[in-house]
Image 1: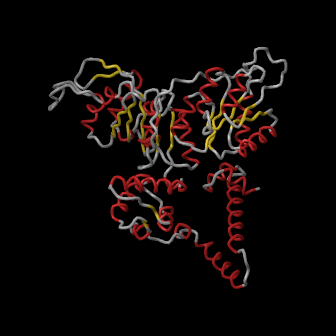
Image 2: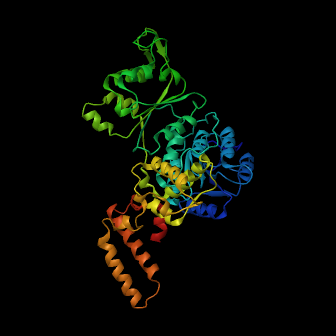
Image 3: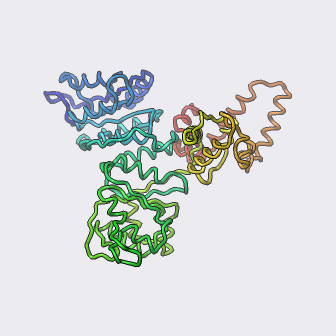
Length: 478
């Protein structure tokens, strides 16, 4: 059995209870009921302070698992996590929050949290998590690592399921001294992810050095990475430290690693394997301690097959892989990003407050964004500079955006839009009511049925294909 805070050993073979801590009564109620329905004993608290008092009471049985909210009156969830780990580090804690970002997830995992659940979360998943944790009586959690200062700043923006998954991955990986390969289309924010991994790691107070290997001529790239001695080549008048030496103790971000020439790939492989290298023209062996994070928009596996990238180097870099979603696959984040970038542009240009009109936001949401987040950021800067009013309308957007909001549906979808229009006209002429509600209900039922059929009834996959949350899908099915 797990260790508890009771002075006397437990006289029952029944597993200790689960605790649920949340100041929101409705959230607390539904989670407690779901866990009880799954066969668990559950105690609930409306504050972390009440739970801490219970934890300190030797008459009260310590929990086998705790679910805690983050933002609560009095002691917050992360402080509660710290205190639990300091007095009973073997008790697993699951952190819950409606405010999911890199800082929140990193703080939770760095404090020793077992898992981070983004509200609203799937109750089935929460119960499955509890079952997994309690399967092994002798499972214990590691001691929390020392906290490194985390600046209160915006790093990555988005609340979509793909971004929440990314935040959780960053929160876990930031603590681990592993090489990470970030893959994503141009403009998806690969360097932002690399900086977040560094900022929330134990190396946060050391340098973060970034280099785009595709932007530096091949003949200069070796010197940029490894430095050179005076006289190593024409123009080398003095010793120069390369990016590896500059990043010593910290993180080196190698952007567009797929464009690195093969000879340099061999040198890079040795550094990753041995943590040592020679400067160009040098004889002194330089030793470094650097975490390498690489990024690419290319298919490195295909480049390996074509003989353009070393397989052994890919294995060194690709210890953990993060795939960044393109903006078109997380359209629900476009309003958040557009508002943020517009206000940022207004501040940079010394303008007053700016806001998007509804028709302009519809056009932004319909665009496919081949340049991803970077394209949206540049658009906001350009429109803010050129528009005359405080409210930016569809007419203020470039010509490419001034299309009907139905265009994305009509492209390849006219097959069903025309019959829909005929049905709508017939209903109107017949004087029928509730046309909108009936059409929406029928459309949603059709979409959900087809998505579930395509994914063999897998709710999470169906929800992802539809672009909605699993909770939303489950609610609509009911």
